[in-house]
Image 1 (cartoon, rainbow, N blue to C red):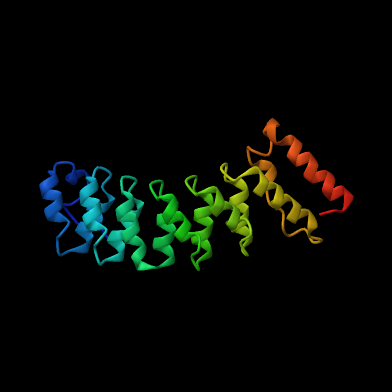
Image 2: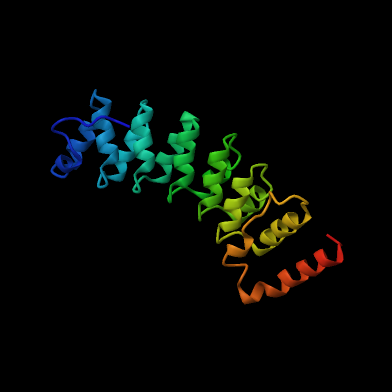
Length: 197
């Protein structure tokens, strides 16, 4: 990825004050700004400043930093690239609203990361369960927040397909084995046996 700057390592950043980091985030050398973005103790307001950087490598490292707040993540999506959207969709601080927006991305890998994110709203997971890409649906099936009704619909669809290509792992979702959902699952299986679905 990026080349390290001699004499400026993340260990050297430990000794920098917040004021010095703010000053360094305006440095002419983009590699210095990358190092600051990668530093796990970079203050949140410095990460927000770095999210405005025009250099995509700097913003990529901001998107990877676990301390990055939602406002910085929203700014980073302005690049529109698959990689940047994917990193934001994967981030634990991404808001449900931004995940909803990213779930409509033209990039399949972005939708897949949205389907994996535990903060993704259930209505978005239900919509993604009907995505044209198998791997997006696969990730929805494994997301522990996917509603049981969506999992049942996915299992019904699987059983309607004659060829064995579509096989969503709904049985691996913790909700599938939850005793309180067994009656609904049993009813769905009965409808399949009767040929009513």
